[in-house]
Length: 159
Image (tube, rainbow, N blue to C red; front, side, top):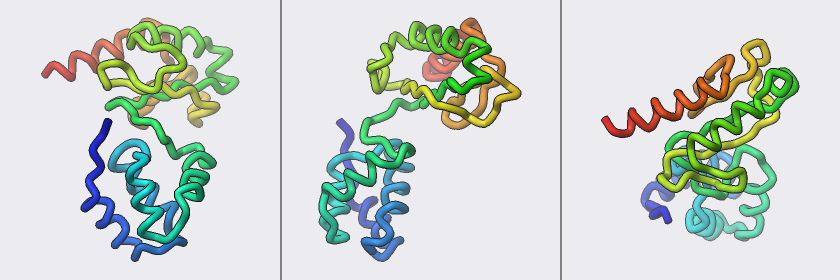
């Protein structure tokens, strides 16, 4: 479990003058720091801006770009849009699960390195099938390219 730095949260709150109307950008900044929204941080923000924890939780779960689950160092998004799907993105995703040792219901790999997200479209249809690793696009993926990508990321962690 991650330790929340409340001084950091205070600096984010100060940036937005602790305004209730600024909870979305506050939450965005917190997520930039932690890659997700830690429960303790949301409770703290709710108290500081005078909002109910339920309201902030509602916002966090309504917007797709917010996550309540801790994420790995590498967030890998695999496109499942039409162009990617017809070019066998399912096979690419299967290779990704195999290479990371993850299952579809896992939020993060056991070593904390990987989070896999299946998305509707990454907006790079001409390069299908595509994935992103921390928002860097990897075009024309194949199962072998995916296995190599994961191997390269693991190797980079050793250096």
